[in-house]
Amino acid sequence: MTNYRRIYTPGATWFFTVNLAQRDNTTLLVDNIDQLRQAFRYVKKRRPFNINAAVVLPEHLHTIWTLPSDDCHYSTRWSLLKAHFSRSLDKDERISASRISKRERGIWQRRFWAHLITDENDYNQHIDYIHWNPVKHGWVKQVQDWPYSSFHKYVELGGYPLDWGGSIGEVDLEVGE
Image (cartoon, rainbow, N blue to C red; front, side):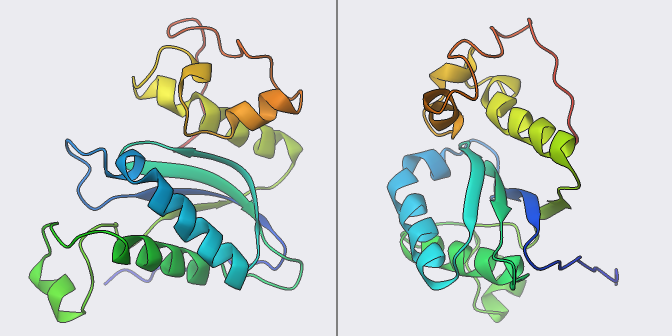
């Protein structure tokens, strides 16, 4: 068995990738965007944190969070968020025997990708990556066309021009996923 360890740093800023268990032919997250937003509100009320940037795609999401200065428990937040969202959906997903034995739903992958943001350049690269992701995966041709993204808030605040990123094929961003 792999010895899986995470870094926990109070007050840190993190980039996350969280995937559905079944990523093929699903639009579960965007089809249930209101329930997902409610799950985020539910968790933020109980375990405050700041969402710096986010994009929700049909079968995965990316986000950057900053935790309170005395708190390092992002795993607890993800657990609460996944559970709250899962409880809001009908039970019609495939559930493996191991998940049944642990009384788990089959909606989310058990693990998630976490990257500690190390400096301003790292932060900016990951924000760009988040906002470019719907274009990268072919859901839209321009960043501004994807509705489930913090990109629109960044445009409102003057962080990006509305036409940032151009069209597919004009920009090649590379940040590790």
